[in-house]
Amino acid sequence: MSHAIERVWAANGLAARALAPLSWLFAAATGVRNALYDLGVFRSERLPIPAISVGNLSVGGTGKTPVAAWVAQQLLALGASPAIVMRGYGADEPLVHARLNPAVPVIVNADRVAGAREAAARGATVAVLDDAFQHRRARREVDLVLVAAEQGAATRLLPAGPLREGRGALRRASLLVVTRKSATLAEAEAVAARWTAFAAAPPSCVIALVPGALHDARDPQAATLPREVMKGKRVLAISAVGAPSAFTAQLTTLGATVTQATFPDHHAFDARDAAALAARAETVDFAVCTLKDAVKLGPLWPRVAGPLWYLSQAVVVERGAAPLHEALHRLVRGIRP
Image 1 (cartoon, rainbow, N blue to C red):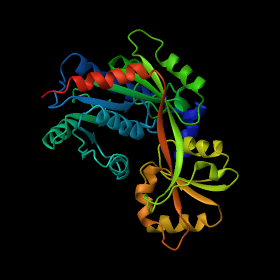
Image 2 (cartoon, helix red, strand yellow):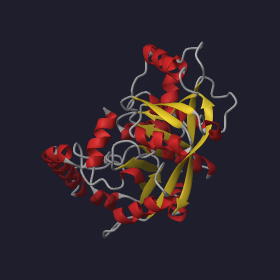
Image 3 (spheres, helix red, strand yellow):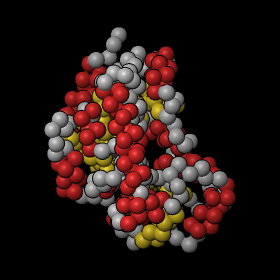
Image 4 (cartoon, helix red, strand yellow):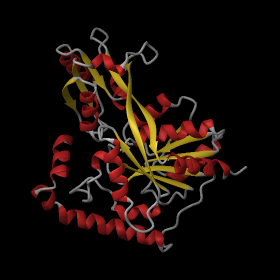
């Protein structure tokens, strides 16, 4: 299903045009809601601690979770005490944050205002609001808006396209962050230029989500394997993420011959899924998933089966580091005693 939806959005053909009236209704509803906030009819609430939102304009596949985790790591390095505040759609994202930043509290609450209050009560000095760009009731000091370079040509709103809001929403953003997995740096820079080519656009930066080492999904503390071991090997790519094609493209770029096993985003794996995938893995050299899948699938993977690996992702700021780091420093300077 996820592949079919991606094909509809990418083709921008008859199916997408048939859904266009629904996109117009979605755009109208979104526009009215934003106008009510802009006019002060709907009011945003001041949070007890400074906050930074890491959100996006499209559904899934922008690298929001690793970027939010990276932001928390940067804030820790600057001497702040961050907490991740998120809606927690699906069981995977809170587990991923706990894996990436064990020292950072993860608050799961669909009400980001209440979540920030809980974070403050637990000693946090700054809140990292994961996926909160459209959650305007929670007032924040910094808004990072992510756009995937691989989706940079998208113009249609849901359901005819992947966008939650149009480019005009960038007027509310502090910084546009273009992420790339399989796209080139030049392609990502072109997307940044295209998305900021209007008045009141924020500055932009480009972040690469670079594949790292292979980790054992059943035992994250075990020895890792270098990513180069997949070159020339047959790999079963297991993914239940927003943009499975980007994950597959990364593995292909590393020289693997990839067979896909895709599931809907946030799929709740069960023992039958694990057994079936382990059986398929017997026909390839490596079974590899994302960290988002590993935190759910690893505990279910049969002990008698071969290993299940996940491919780590490193955040590398390739362009526009200055405004990004200035935003984080400004946030820390504004921490209220």
